[in-house]
Image (tube, rainbow, N blue to C red; front, side, top):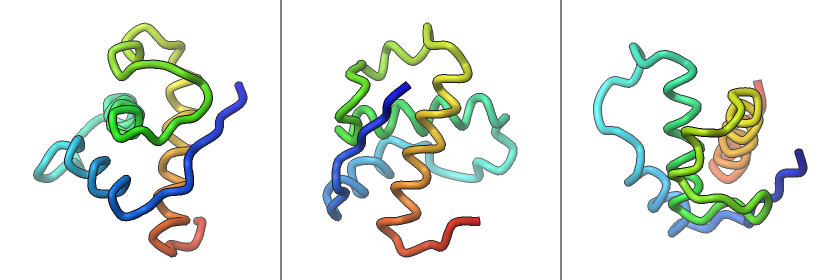
Length: 85
């Protein structure tokens, strides 16, 4: 799958975090967290390609959700100056 994301600005990060749940997400299962990340990034307008709606995530292949989540988290980390782990 080819994934393209926008160049993130402050407004994009704010829109993303407003879509994420508030509170301790440390107990959230990884598969649920990946879905949350992809939906939040989608609603915040981060994805150029592939084109999809947040509602589409429920019917996506879990491997695709993992790949999209990794791309979004990587882009967030890059924008915030967090070195890759």
